[in-house]
View 1 (cartoon, rainbow, N blue to C red):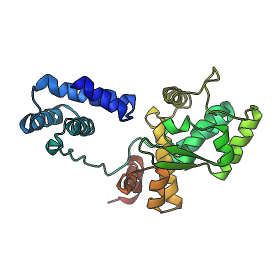
View 2: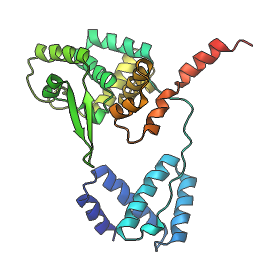
View 3: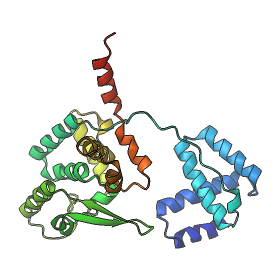
View 4: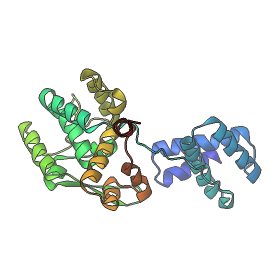
Length: 266
């Protein structure tokens, strides 16, 4: 049944990572229980809560619920565990550190300067960033389609577009992917993450805040500071629910500390 489930996932156009994750969760269940019933499912959920973080538990539960649909036992689906949302954002690069890093890279490595410029000025995920081509820069946007066929348009602001066109012209590139490795091939998401950590160390910035998604957070924080339209931001970020976007209305832990230090003098 497990192998049949894997074939079903593959035919359903799930990503390889999702297929592996779902397969692992169901296999883990069967390693502990011989039968799919209400009692065993509840026990499995309790065991996971005792052994994993809530986010991991919910990922496994999503896999189990998918499997229950597959074996036509959807009535046994398990509810997700509630994740307590933090009252602050963690590990978001500050505006000062972003500008410092940006200025350092503009002098030392223009290609990597453009990487963080695109991340911070478009709000793109790193997996989306590596899909940008010269053709998209000329258009001023890129359309990304999810597996469910949902369209997300990522805009390239005019200032960034002009800067990028000059950069591409200087290296005589007329077409194709714009973010390349030293071999002239499209860079990987892992390659970007690893190099950003090296730059953090080189320029003495806290490595905890220098990673691809941190610049996406910076985009959202800066956007709300200039335009308090959270529904529009949710669309720009590609969030399914506006509730996901609301976290950006909160201050970072550093901002909270600075505010407390300034306000409280009693």
